[in-house]
Image 1 (cartoon, rainbow, N blue to C red):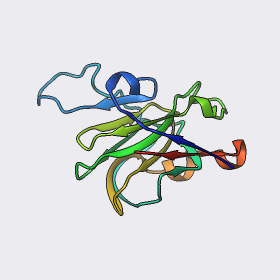
Image 2: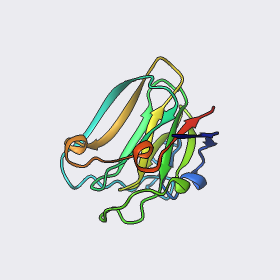
Image 3: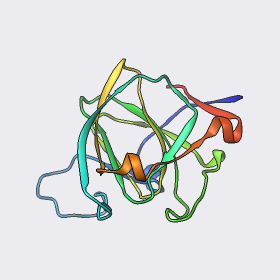
Length: 163
């Protein structure tokens, strides 16, 4: 298996745009605008929860998408994290991400990430022994809307995130 070392890009609103929205702090009462994420949660019961993840290392061997829903992630304690993303071509069509289209990002602990419906994602990854994340998706996302491609089996490669 070929392991490709990647240095994650610092996430900005501009470089995250093909994949979703980087939600940065703003003044309370600001009207909805382009800095906000358009959410698609009408396919079921929305679920907001805090998921506690153990450190799984920084090697990405698979990538997943949810074609029925947008998904929002944010670290709860201000710690940075990493995610690898591939933009959706058509969230309703069967597709696999091309490895050369996968980009890895460093997400600050003071922002949230709202993924477009169908965005391929691997992560969150992080350096701490464990980390908590707010996760907004649908109640059944992980059971009925979870397409995964094994990069190692399908393409013979994995990505190693090098902070």
